Image (tube, rainbow, N blue to C red; front, side):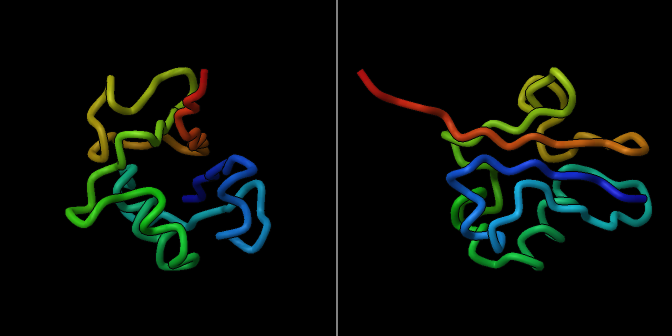
Length: 94
């Protein structure tokens, strides 16, 4: 099963400039398994998405459809066929 991951402009340089990355997810895919495959393909993304314990960084939001995965099962969120994840870093300013 393929899962699409859409990356914001700020993360694209760490994924060879890609706006969208297709990940082959086997078995019963979760956000965690897709992130592991994404980070394996593009190792520079690892420290920008997850911390040393493998948790999603506080300033990174991941959406499955209209739902933030933090409101679902976090990294354990199961993904449906043809799922698309959107990664959005929090924006601060004043």
